[in-house]
Image (cartoon, rainbow, N blue to C red; front, side, top):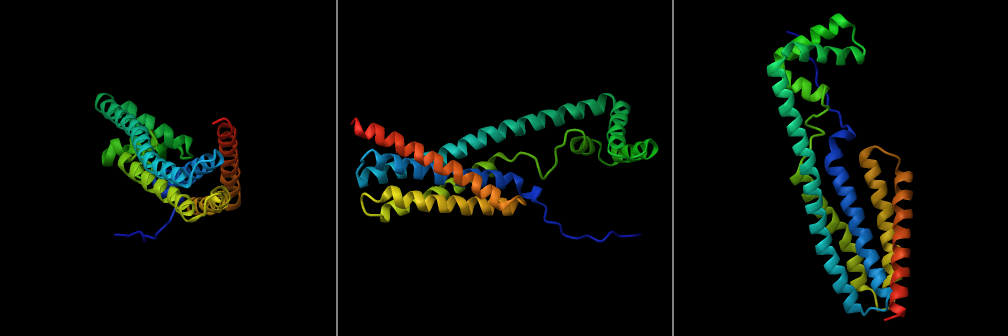
Length: 233
């Protein structure tokens, strides 16, 4: 019997589930916490009020990210399970039509009709539901929704992203929080964008520029709002 040699392949798609949640969480953690600190300081808040606001944002943001990600990904998971259950019923009720449907998919992918029918028939015998789930619905183990994993990754990433701006604000003398937190946060965003792009196989410069631009814009807007309201309080 001929055995096919196995070799390891590290595709970015294997990391998409947790990578998306981790990058989003860390980016939100850095941006939300730093923007709030900058806004409160621009409104002439005390050092203590800045730290209280930062800690509150860190805790509330992590919980919000976790719950939001869990609900969102759970909805996706529910839809996937419903589609798989529906496909299972169709396989029980009309197996011949499902076989032809699978063969048509392989024909569209480039196989000739005879080979496509042979492949479809063999896969229907081996694992009919698995074949339709993967090739008709586009659901696989690598891309399927994992709510708990996404929620934990988002909460942890938000906390990891929000902690540095808060620690910098804690260590910075009163009156210098905006400058120090802004510069450090933009540097963190550059690193985060580059690392996320590297892990996902994307262009690092483009990703770093994108997150830095939006981060700078968010902090500038927040600082402006804080200054306007601070002047009227």
